[in-house]
Structures are given as C-alpha cells and as structure tokens.
Length: 122
Image 1: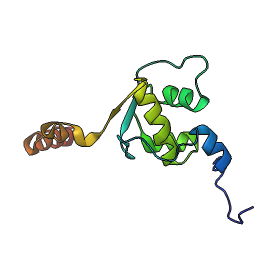
Image 2 (image 1 turned 90 degrees about the vertical axis):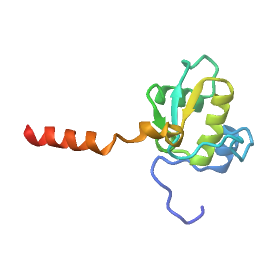
Image 3 (image 1 turned 90 degrees about the horizontal axis):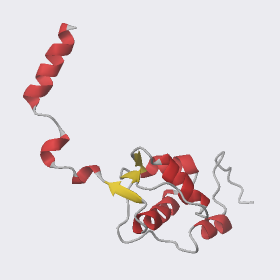
C-alpha cells in the first residue's frame, strides 16, 4: 500500500498500465493534447484490445482526449498511447480546434449583435 487514497474507479496499477500499453511509456510523435477531438472511423473488430474497443465506442461522436481518459479511468498519458495505436491503424481521426480556419472560429461582431438583438425580441 502506498498510503495515499485512490480515486474511485481509477486503476493506476503499474502492472496493468504496462500491459495495456504493451510496455510503451510515451505517446507517438504526433502526440494529442487534452482538447483534441477524436472520432471513430471504424467499428471494433473481434479480438481487439478491450480499451481500443471502448475508445471506438466512445468516439462515435467527437470526443475530447480528456473525456476519453475520464471515461476509461486511465491516465491521459496511457490514453494517448492507445489513441496513437488507433490513429496508425486508421481507425480514428484526430481533430484539433487550433487547426480550424481562422474565419471559422468565431462569427463577426455584427452577426453576434444581430443574434443578440433577435434573442432580446423574443
């Protein structure tokens, strides 16, 4: 025992984490960050690692890396390694908000004013 209380549902057992990542301790070069959105491109197949299956199920709709880690009750660093596996196998796509075109980020000020005016009229 380490003497520190564990979080409910969290499994940080080093042996399990080592097994889940097949001994890897670093995410791939194209490391994801916490807000990268992950989207499944394929359905799980028989024989896949259970964590990979769960990620593909969770990401049927765009899901942030941090949300995936929370749902799996795994450290983000471990989830990034698993996501790297799926990305290399073309089973997911990763989208980062910072790569969105600048004009697509926010509407112009006039549009926002018109929306606000319309809402006030309701």
